[in-house]
Image (cartoon, rainbow, N blue to C red; front, side, top):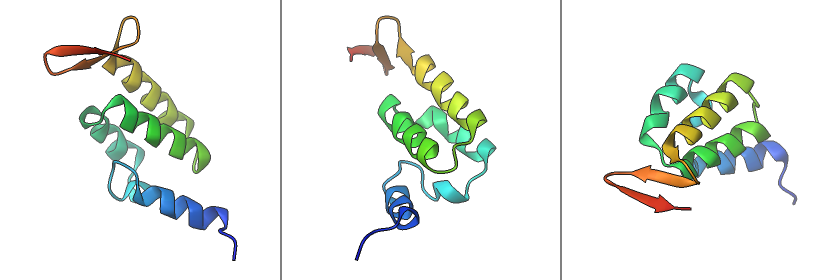
Length: 84
């Protein structure tokens, strides 16, 4: 038995850093972005691009990712800077 794309999408959704991602609105997802790491935002971005592909949300992911990254590819964390 092969896995179909919708089944794969559901399995991937269970591993996302935001619970019930597929049932959330654009605004609800946007409100949660501040709590996520760059890696988590990138996972959401990739999932969104492969599934619903909402361009306004993809743009928000990219803006938030850039905001969390500092100059020269560093990630801002609590009181310290980590090189990527």
